[in-house]
Image 1: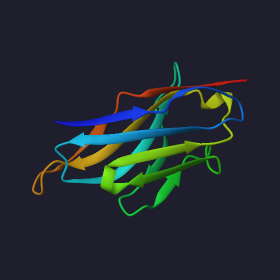
Image 2 (image 1 turned 60 degrees about the horizontal axis):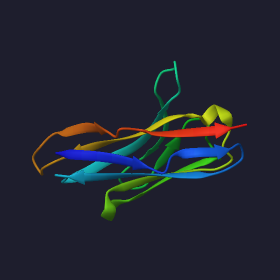
Image 3 (image 1 turned 135 degrees about the vertical axis):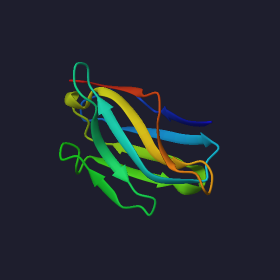
Image 4 (image 1 turned 120 degrees about the vertical axis):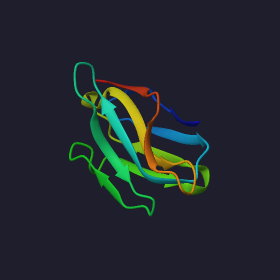
Length: 121
């Protein structure tokens, strides 16, 4: 079975920083794109950042210039460095990835359980 486990969430004051990590484990042959989503109470889950297997990145307009995603392919881990945090960044952050379990298997999307980020004003 494949698992994605996030860590690094917490409570921080506005203007502060947090670094989220998401480690994929289990039966993994290869990982394609790795994404970060967030969901605030009463709102839909939104894409925050994407990083492809070769390191190309994309960000939501709301976080450009403040958030940076990176990955360590040897560790099957993706990171989200969040700087200059604002109260509106408060949400549960989820990582997600397209993973192939075996060489001939199809790609499947997996999700982590989420980690809470709370930014106080």
